Image (cartoon, rainbow, N blue to C red; front, side):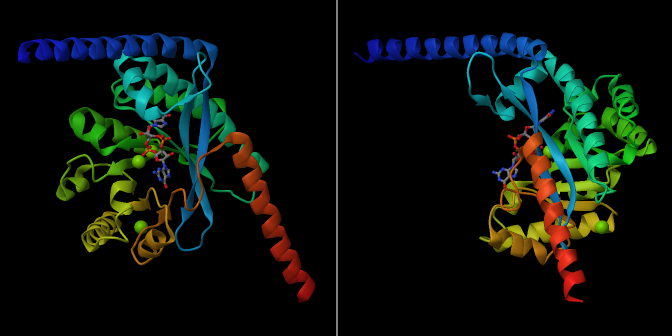
Length: 295
Ligand code: C2E
Ligand code: MG
Ligand code: MG
Ligand code: MG
């Protein structure tokens, strides 16, 4: 009896592995078609100045609505497959061009934000491509953008994965005036001491720390230490994934330059982000005309 149930389990296990492999293959070919069929779009999440509540810039995030279904497939599911097949390079180049075009349009349309910037996530596979730098420079030139308005986000684990190759590349980017943010900081096993060796301008503290900050003193102590260290290394600090007013209140007591999270704003498709910008403008207009009227 034990033997047969053992065999049964074995069969189930095989079938599950088979299903996973088929699912993987299906996703690989669906992704290849997605590039051709332009199934990607971009959502933008505001990054807010902690002290003033002003808009500083935004982060661009890719979205994929697969042609075979209506469902959005989350990046955490398809980016690893796109990385393994190399399709991430094409997706990344599409993102670069699309985001630069959008940013150029918004900068013209909203002159009240002369410093508006956008950051874009870069995969470790893109970093291994010799063409990455020129792809970035070309995209900026094509849309007449200065280099300081585009920022690149690279995860701590990507940098740790291939430090000797990535650090010189980050230095080149920096020489071109393109700022680099280290994303998901705290999850990549670099030591605090090694931070000083990374040529980065911005540190994004991972949401797993931020989200525990109002529940647990250990987390707030860790975030406070990271923020202080980063400030001393001349990096700007972003707290990611703020969902509650308690978390925001805690962050406001620390030296964090920027905040980002669902509490402040969810990522929005381009058209929605644009109306959000317009609404802020008309609110600002109302505020100034009130001042003029009453004085
Ligand atoms: P990330 O770069 O750390 O982006 C932040 C993620 O947290 C986004 O998830 C965003 O929607 C989500 N988020 C923002 N605020 C909150 C919050 O308050 N609470 C919670 N729970 N989540 C929040 P998303 O868009 O699903 O992206 C997941 C990851 O996929 C990104 O993490 C990034 O590593 C990767 N990714 C997204 N777009 C791209 C892309 O265009 N290229 C590459 N290479 N990777 C991308
Ligand atoms: Mg990011
Ligand atoms: Mg992150
Ligand atoms: Mg600072």
